Image (cartoon, rainbow, N blue to C red):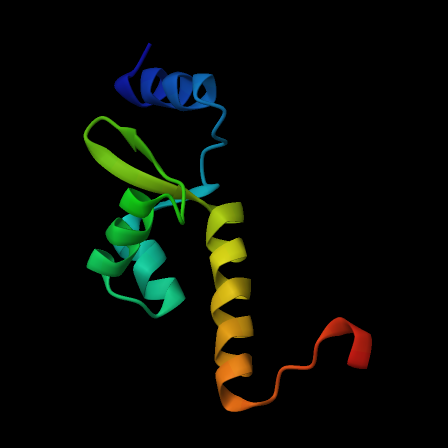
Length: 87
């Protein structure tokens, strides 16, 4: 087996589908936040990630969850957020 096949098998063993996770720097770019902010969130348990071969990854679903939380917070701060019972 090639090294790529072995790496893919190990990722699947972790429950990760190849292409469904991003490195922390790429996740930070997508979220518009600094890498150190994401690492701090992970340390505090506010975000989840996993380490594979010394590289930390974040699942796409976690990135999407964080995007929603960031958007909601920005709406609340700008006064545009409406609680569900007012919609």
